[in-house]
Image 1 (tube, rainbow, N blue to C red):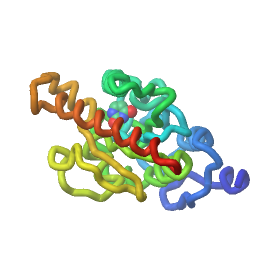
Image 2 (image 1 turned 90 degrees about the horizontal axis):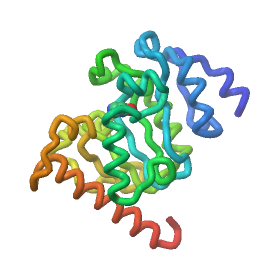
Image 3 (image 1 turned 180 degrees about the horizontal axis):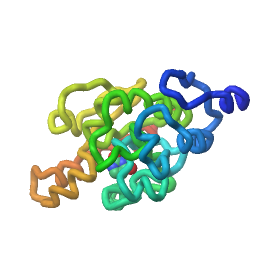
Length: 215
Ligand code: URA
């Protein structure tokens, strides 16, 4: 395993087979050197993951912003701080109860949406993170994560809050925290109000699975 891992170059046409990485930390130095897509030329640091690799809940976002690029961790900027408050509201500790990562590990310049070829080049890293964390529940933060993971073309407004199945596990798409920062109202039916419903449903799902003997 070690030899295979060391031997893999980071060019876009070289596949990353399932089982390449022994643990999630092993992806980090590889992503920091990665040149599988054009984002490798402009990043400062790849932001690969944060949280607990044995968590039962995996949150998948779009891609790093400016602060994430500087610090090399996903969701450490304003959107991440809001995300942490949302999780805390249902008693989920971001360091203990969740594993957080992104569809693309390197910042798209100007925080643009990642291009389909950038998503495709980076997807093997996400596949490995999913294999290694093996979460009980997925949450897709925003439309890019929903589309990249499921191929779902319908929008987030239509699908948020519904239980989907991803890799045989319950999965829910929710609004991206950046969208909530741009829409701060908390009136009934507002994006923030809907997020509150959704995160409570995620919490309830985790509790229900924990009550089953084999999950
Ligand atoms: N938005 C994302 O999708 N991911 C981050 O890491 C930060 C902001």
